[in-house]
Amino acid sequence: MNSVGFFNETTDEIKETEEVKKVIHYALEQEKLNYVVFNIIFVDDVFITSLNQDYRGKNQPTDVITFALEDNLTIDLGKYRLLGDIYISIDTAKRQAKEYQHSVLRELSFLAVHGFLHLLGYDHMNAEEEKIMFEKQEWILGGYGIKR
Figure 1 (cartoon, rainbow, N blue to C red):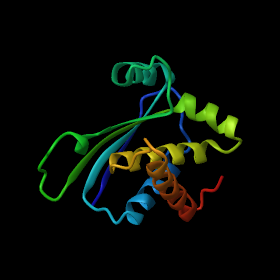
Figure 2: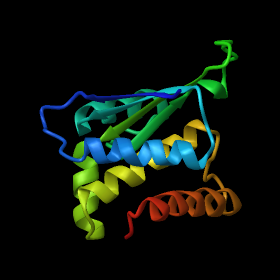
Figure 3: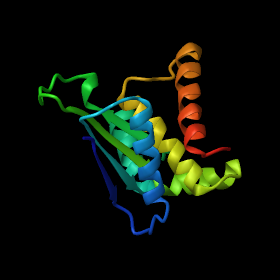
Figure 4: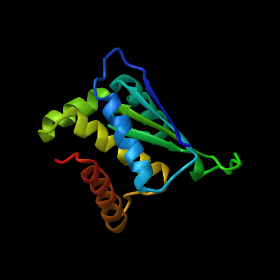
């Protein structure tokens, strides 16, 4: 059994949350994962800018930041894996959806899956890693039915 917490720390109503939950559970099925625990936290640009400054040295908003616990810690929870937290800026997601001319649902789903893959250790620091990660993202989103 997986446990994914969804938290809205903004004043916005995020209508897409229930569908994003389904996308993430689909991603878990595709990755054949069970007994994982992580959170997705929706925040505003002010909050994510603070995180971005504190942890990445960049004083600007970003769309998604992940804190992967398995990167640096060995936590023995028996059969459970405590993956970490995904922070998504709803403000930036809405701007990007408009800029890329697709729905907020598509953008939030993309950012949630992107963050989820980071928690699993995928990255995009070079062209080879980027190709692998972005193909996997599109495979998950497309398999669920979320297209560009």
